[in-house]
Length: 439
Image (cartoon, rainbow, N blue to C red; front, side, top):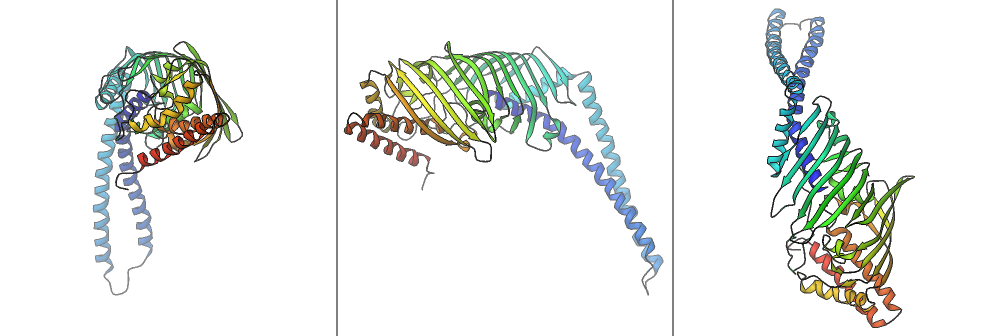
């Protein structure tokens, strides 16, 4: 989703140039016509008012007429120039739309690719510049980077239906976007280490333009996801539908506003959404997921601490539509044969916090059932770059630790006290990490 958001934003930026040009020319024409209308009305009223006593009417009238004629001549010159430029612009766009449509689109994609360091290409394209509809065949996007995400993607069919008027009156809206038979690879670099050796949670999508897709449809997606030099995870999605899909809430809309059917490393996953009065009910179902498949890409704790075994994940959440959507989530995580340990790159604080949790899981031979509830704010997902961003996993770690502490409390008070201290310590660690420097 990150590549889709960034590339579409740059595509829109290129389209803004002719749209703003036409808008400026039309505005100049309307301004001069409005001026002429004001002059006519004012002139009519001026003629009806007699000259003031003691003032030579002819001299005053002559001075006023000269001024109006001067302004009118200037307005006519501006209108004439605007008409000529508008005619040339519309003519050029018409010519590009009918004769040079494909070269024009290639130029637009080249501009988008240059800004993002991406090689973009396609076999053929059809559509209309004046309706905002574009349909590509064999579209490709490739980027190699050490500091940003790298990808090599191919799409057999890709189409968009853009509401052109929203280019001038944001938010920019795509009425529909669809892609089918998507293949390739996507790699994210390892996050930079923080002061305590932990990974930074500041990954954000930095798109030039915000946009909204009313109906997003993806079919037959097969991508290998990886982080750093780690082994890839095979993600196969039979179908993804999202309505709407917002560029600045891409991860949130994927998790909570989409219907998804697919597999991770050959194991079924699904996300389903049902409408309710004023909100949504979302269900995640991952009945037999290898722990290593998830921890290879989601490296943040607690998921990144899991090795071997399987996870059976069931999540039911409820939320209401509004400016501040609160997601009320019920989690059921069943671990079987899981081994847990902090990663090699973990800092001293993370290892200390991981010890009571990983120790408890391993003491149960990796067979642990976790039932817990958490509430999240939609705003924490804004501009999140990937599913490995910190907002969800920070809260999830605390909830898992508390759930384990509750279970451990039934066995030994010592374990429960250790876990409680770990939770409080982790909360303090998060607060300090989020605090701006110097405060």
